[in-house]
Length: 453
Image 1 (cartoon, rainbow, N blue to C red):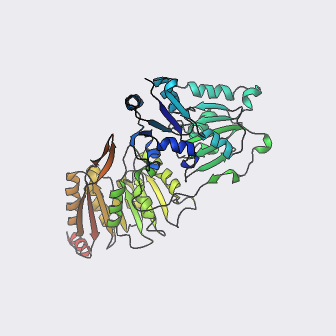
Image 2: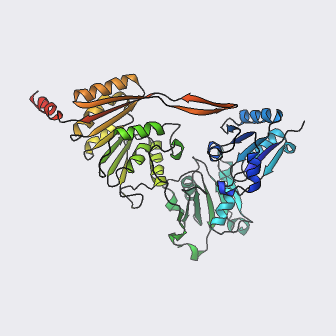
């Protein structure tokens, strides 16, 4: 019995789907795709299966559904046969069982954006490559000397989260390959799309880039090496609103204040002034700080985080949402945000006194952190602490009570719908304790009593 699976190329945005593509997707009884694609296609009423890293299990599921006579449609990024899932499905199920409906690839879109012919371009994928085979190929191509067959051809490189554009730039410089300029394409087709040109690749070595992205290298003529920065094309920053979906933020393995919790935390902060000074201690992805910026357009935000990877996430999220740092201008409103890579207790004494504080991390030092922050808060200042640990909840309440804060406790349990083969179920997230404290007038008495001791 022949089993057919339709594989549809999504292109780089939903606008790239043709009427034929849409008709095939609408006919699906089982729709397979990335979580982003499935969310964009939420109007299609059928079983939906998200693509995960467990590709073998996914293939078995697709075979099972197709074997039952169900119409299976797989939605793939770009062109399914250009570094996509199409090849994997053909190898697993046989070419006679797979129908491919191509669309524009990210590489085609990138070349179109810079109006560069690509009929003789060289393609290299560094995505998920554990060996150095492809980087050696890149090296060999670029040091081919006078061999014009290689040296004058443009090179398109698919990147990943390790072999980033900055990694590529450093790799080329390390090997004395400096004759090529770099075009960089971030989030093609998305609202946050950005296209940049670096005539000197050294300028790209310390940059932080959003994903997905790809690189085009081109050997430029001498007169082209001073191209103006008007080559940079950037779409407007993403709008900021309360309780934004978690997947809009760069974050580490789900370590983010979840959207529903974030909305409650911000309500507890009582952001009543446009120019509050806000501390985000244990900032993680910076999601709370970014949403807070919407409410304090003339304020200042200090985001403290001790993990280097998370600091990079914060900076990428600032770029995505147009948040200003102290070093540059632009962004939404005039709120500025400073990211500090250090342990909380090392630096908080050197910061300006806060009006509002959120503590999203503290661990074993939670009591000391609360005391030192409480000492620096002015009267009517507000501190909000999140924890999933009963012990830290107790310590936080005790610490705030000792300092004569007005304390409120909220316990939040969120459940979200999760798709199953024949319907939806609710999946519970970890319950979160939200402790809020307001520094009230009686703190003066506390300070006086301490002075007498």
